[in-house]
Amino acid sequence: MTDFVQLIWNEILKIVLRVSNWVMLILLVALSPALLLLLKFGDYPGSALMALEQSFAMFFLVVLFMLIVASESVASEFTTGTIKLLLIRPWQRWKILSSKFLAVTVFLLGLTVIFTLINLIVSYVLFPAQIAGVPDGELSSYENNLLLLIVYSFIRALILATFAFMLSALFRSSALAITLSMLLYFSGTITNGLLRLALKPDDYWIVKYLLFTNLDLTQYFSEPTGSFGVTSLGWSLFILAVYFVLFLLISWLSFAKRDVRS
Image 1 (cartoon, rainbow, N blue to C red):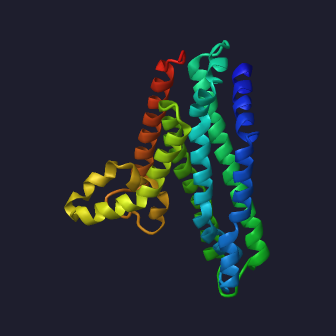
Image 2: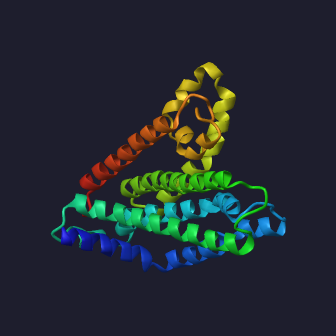
Image 3: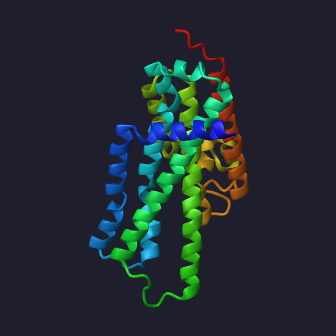
């Protein structure tokens, strides 16, 4: 168990000590509060918590960062040839792959905390803690929605990072894994729009099983049955769990059978 924890720690250090990741982290810290500054210049009338909720529109920076990190996690080992150094050590392949995935997950959690704290601090610096005419009950609802927003954003980023991790295990090229994972991320909204145009309401049941239509859990803040009217929060969590397990299973099968002699 101690060796496995050390293996996870080594993988976290690989992520943290990579110079390119520090550059992206600096950009994340600098750009995260950009929307809050725009709201301030635009005389946004809401409170700090309301502004913080709006600031999560910039969470895509965390997602993009994690897609790159997850895409490089396994593929970069093959690109640089360091995978041979890992496999000659007395560690089973499932432990190596698990340590890499857990390191990616821990790093994602850290980025989510950093993003939230930065925007929380900036929100309270730029906006009042309370505004006149807003009852305490409504303020509490904002706090609850904000907590759910953080959790939903993390879950979405984790599923996308798991997809990128799967591609990293499937392909030797980090660039290919990054490209395909970015394509999935940016095509989600477009695909949902095309499905809405192509399908009749009676055929909306088809979208219940697609990743795109279940990925954004914030849709249930306003629509209990989802944007297509055929899903629910529990259903989407179930579908995401199925995709999550599927992505990890493909990752494991690919990595376990990968020939590293060449």
